[in-house]
Image (cartoon, rainbow over all chains, first blue to last red; front, side, top):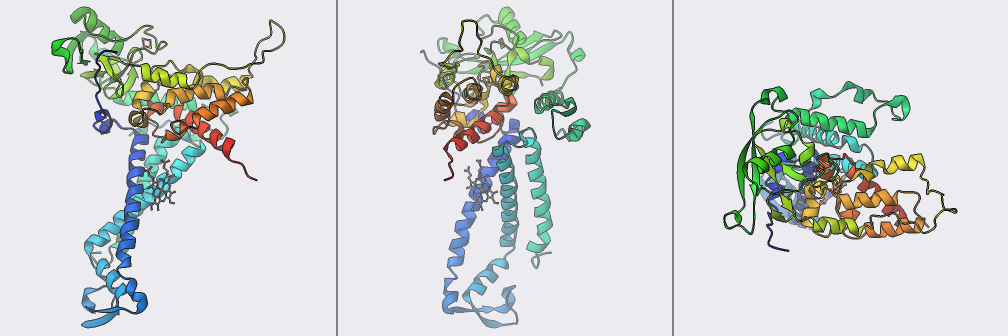
Length: 154
Length: 291
Ligand code: HEM
Ligand code: SF4
Ligand code: FES
């Protein structure tokens, strides 16, 4: 055949404004799935720094710095408490926790939607169930804010 | 988007669609599609009377020096009531630029030769009313297929995939007697009804993000074609198994990620995703044994 022209993959993501519900659901599901995997490894890496706690390893911290340590002044606490306290004291960590919840909730709700799609149930309503997943995720995330942000502004 | 437009009767539909002649999922889908189009409607037909429509058409021709670099040409076509996208490009070709190239034949959504990428969606030119579209109307060749010239794309790969599923009826034992027919039950005919409507336009294949990235993926049209025969009870069990073996290969049904893009664009309203999902379950059932 003579020469022809390949317009490449530009058609896919350059056209995001025209995507329909099912396509968005797919993108979000991939994204949240991989975010959760990413979180899993971060989680393991961070907590492994506190493994010494099992052997009774301790550190000295200022009690005022950590939300989970009682008292005042230089205090000796086990390393697990210090690690967690150090993280929970940071605004950005609390914010990321809200984000993690949002990601997990969406992934679970849309995962249930995909399960229904796999079983051939309610395929005509697949777009509505995607919107429902989004709205529910939003509601649950907003409702979680007071709990997650306690002590750092709420 | 269309929450306010929801027809109340959809919510009150009885559990069993057979009952009371309630609308079937198919009818509902059709209605939703129509509503979707109505939403987009930017202009009233009567507003367009006596006006011209602005279309932007993709141009490319490897054999003409200044068309080797793809570009868009603008045409202003006088509007007529009932004008379709195909009518508009035909007018442009006949009146303004005879080198404008595209495929078309039946002009009534039967032959499947004029699927274009119109305003960012795969549509049949002859089935799409200009008045339903926002202007300027961008008319491009189908994405993910090589462009041969202007709106003409290379369909070979699509046809290869269609042929890969053996898209013909296979039954060795014919009924006794010369005049006996190979009868199909009404129920079975209903089951395959929608899947028989494919006109091989390749709109679905072009809309599929997975097919774009995996050249070996059979694609929605071919899988739907396979569904049409795999679900036909007149074929023997062995042939159905043979068909499922083709479908359950690495680049068969399992590639589908239920994005529903194909189902959205199919001009014949074939519930493609539904058919693919059903075949996935058939494939699982065939291989899953509890013992
Ligand atoms: C109740 C909880 C969960 C449900 C119901 C669920 C459901 C699903 C489903 C149905 C899929 C398949 C999507 C498809 O058909 O393409 C999927 C994909 C995936 N899930 Fe989950 N999931 C859950 C929890 C998790 C967790 C905790 C993680 C991570 C640690 C995770 C990571 C992933 C990843 C990476 C994918 C693949 C995304 C891709 O296709 O690339 N999921 N999930
Ligand atoms: S399934 Fe629909 S979109 Fe795909 S080729 Fe057939 S008619 Fe065209
Ligand atoms: S010209 Fe035949 S389908 Fe449009």
